[in-house]
Amino acid sequence: MAGTSDIEWTDVTWNPVAGCSLASSGCTNCYAMRMAARLQAMGHHKYAGTTRKSGGRYVWTGRVNTDESSLSAPLEWRKPKRIFVNSMSDLFHPDVPDAFIRRVWETMIECPQHHFQILTKRPGRMAELFASGLIQAETHIWIGTSVESNEVADRVRHLAAIKKATLFISFEPLIGEIKDINLKGIHWAIVGGESGPRARPMEEAWVERLLEICRRDDVAFFFKQWGGRNKKAAGRELHGQTFDEYPLELEV
Ligand code: SF4
Image 1 (spheres, rainbow, N blue to C red):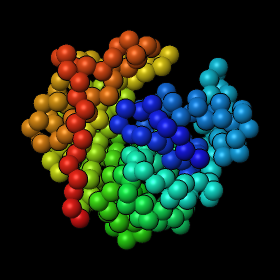
Image 2: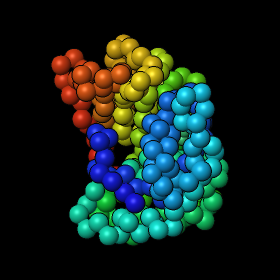
Image 3: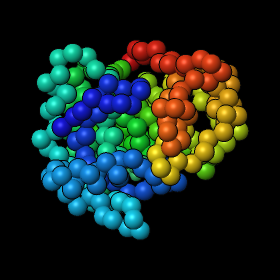
Image 4: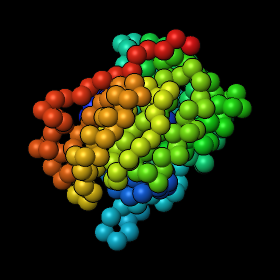
């Protein structure tokens, strides 16, 4: 239902949904696709039918499975945790029903002891659901979107429309230079290079530029990794320093 996570900026992952489809070029080497294929092969019901083999690699089929049995998991964790919601999917994928998203939200509302971190590549749908009142801002629910290159920088606009929430951007995998972007009103930025056998390179100057923008716009900066084929060896220092900043809690 959930597992401790190697992801540097969270404690555990919680996956009430499994399966996805590619949203943009940042998805090309999606690690969740590879992991879902393994879990599907091991017979985990939740991942049934989510991946298939194509050209020597595993890809999403587009099938999205919701998992009712996962919904209550955070209620059972007494100790406060940072919880990454849906590391194996995208909560705002078009095939996740509104009613199921609402149930995920209800679980989160019932667990103010935790911090939930929602990261989507489909912030347009998320913003619509906020506007409709189906979901609402809560201090302990952090809302984020991914911006891997200039081509999808417009995603920030959807976030900026959400008021009274802790907002973050994941610039990972950073696969292109972002010369400028307005991050005013955003609280946290995570920056990282792609890892794995097909990792695309990230230039140091791209990271330095994002650090400048974060300092200018008063955004906490978290540098996750350089990435590459051997991400451990590449490490996560920038200018001999580790950047592990987090946003301040907001009052709603
Ligand atoms: S949106 Fe996330 S889970 Fe879905 S394909 Fe892209 S990277 Fe993978």
